[in-house]
Amino acid sequence: MASNKKDASGFTPQERHQIIVDYLKVINKPTKVFHLRWKPGELLTGRVLESTPMFWYMKYQWSRSEIEEMFYKARCVIGPLFDTALQQTYGGSPGPRWRGAVPQKEKSAWRQRQAEKLAGWQAEQAEKLKRQEEEERQKKLIQQQRKAEEERLRKEAEKTLAYKGKDIWNAVSDFG
Image (cartoon, rainbow, N blue to C red; front, side, top):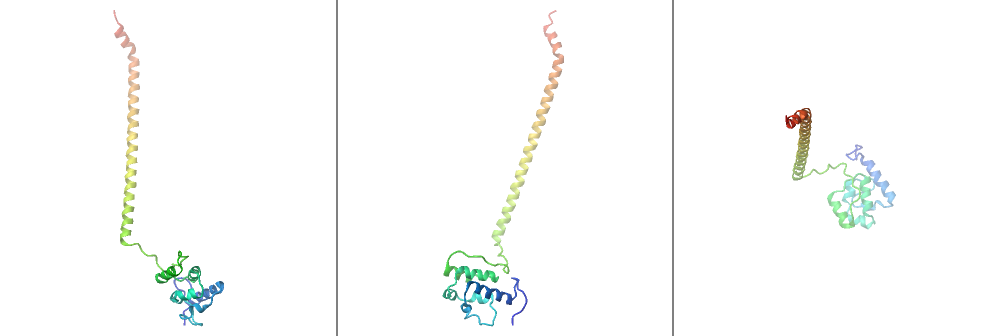
């Protein structure tokens, strides 16, 4: 007897069975395709769907999209062997897949290290660029201060020379 407990997909076995049966009615296909893996009165499960040979799906004129949509609606994971059989039998590209109960594959250790190195290098480059910009800003500020000081000294010297202009003229032009 099947349990009424929901699995990782959020469906109970009875709900999944009903979803599959309803989908078969929508696409107008018989349950005969599962005849070697399932008997009327039992529940249709992901295991029944996936263990049905591709030959039977073809014999009952199923399309790849119908098979994949049935798996998707019933929230059944298409395993690598079944996926390979789909690809070899029907070709084309994969349709929507449900992966809710299957954790995403972790990156390999090498890829993880490369990603960490890349992130470190990018942070280092950003810090270096920030430092260069700050140094350039400081240099410009110092240049501006230096120019302002030179201008101030020039104006001050100009003022002192303006006051002494008469004295210089008198000293140079004094013939007497």
